Image 1 (cartoon, rainbow, N blue to C red):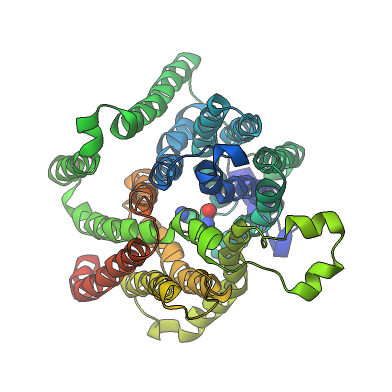
Image 2 (cartoon, rainbow, N blue to C red):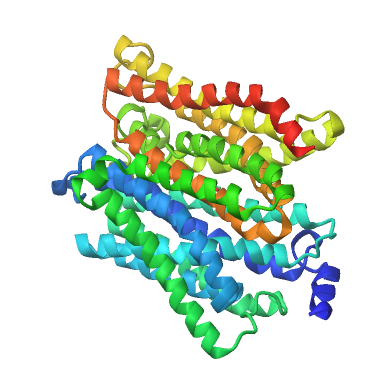
Length: 503
Ligand code: GLN
């Protein structure tokens, strides 16, 4: 369809002189992320709240584990989700169906019962698997490979992600924590519904991109069955390893590690062509470091969220409180919602992303290499946890607020450091993967990148299970700091080797 590509390549009538389709995709992803992060901010707090107070009364460990399985599965599912788009639905319809399934999932959680709670989580996992990788792919399709607006287009899109992620906790955490948990989940569903309506109405702006693959009906049917089987297989493996028989549960990390090792050996010995081995080798090295990064970064919604709830002074200034209507005063008597801290990462990201692109552009050729940026990213995410370990240590010593809580700015500092880390690592990971991947393997290598995020999330849940108080808290955050900082140093040592591989 050269005509179409030309059309959108020349189209400058959307946001910031970009193709009009970007406007539609910007708002679709903004609302999808609104629903995702709005619900995510509530999830652990809802599970750990006592039944008498409207929660599920789970232990911290169980809640962290479910949280990790959920977020890990969301990213895992993007691999079959991408495949289904390429081989069955086309990216465009995948986004539509995915969005509808996500909305259903949130509405399911808005109904107070344990069955609808779990059903909702599964629906969101499946829906996000269909939507998330494909909405990004659609953004890519708006531009030709040479289009100079391409990177800028993705930056604008990333702003949409973070705009949704910024607003969501403000709304959903307030409703969920202060009024009713299920109202918060419902608000997430309403956000996704806005996104769907907007997507339907704005579809015309996408032109001809993302249409279903031109395959025969029988082939499509066969692929559909395969795609569904892939999704079921992923769900099944996760269910067995996390909720299955005890020996499987106990050894899940060993089992996953072995499967990954087998896959790597197979790929390098019988699948890759000789000239592909070096660049793919680099992607594999970065894969392991990326896991460590996300395992630390994704403490945000679990252990950091619990820290905000239990150990952070969230009281509002008394002068401000007296200005509020009486009903509101009662709601904020024990402080602002803990989930509001979930917005801090996004607001920093929105402010700092332009600064970073300006800075890298200005440094030009003198800027750090991609693996060096990766290492800096790991360092900063580790430093964030160092700050929280210090805050935890000060809890017992009576520095700060003194009454078993720390001041409200500690977590803001933690998220600032994390965001700097994210800006050094996340875009670099994506662009390095797409740049190094041999052309016939782009999809597979994108899958590898998503898989690293997925494994990072699984690991984050395991780690956050050690949440506690006193020594346990300090130990947890020290570990969350030590791994990425150690990894940053190791990666620094590996840079000459990596450079040799990419040459
Ligand atoms: N915050 C970004 C998003 O939700 C990136 C997070 C990630 O890739 N793990 O898309």
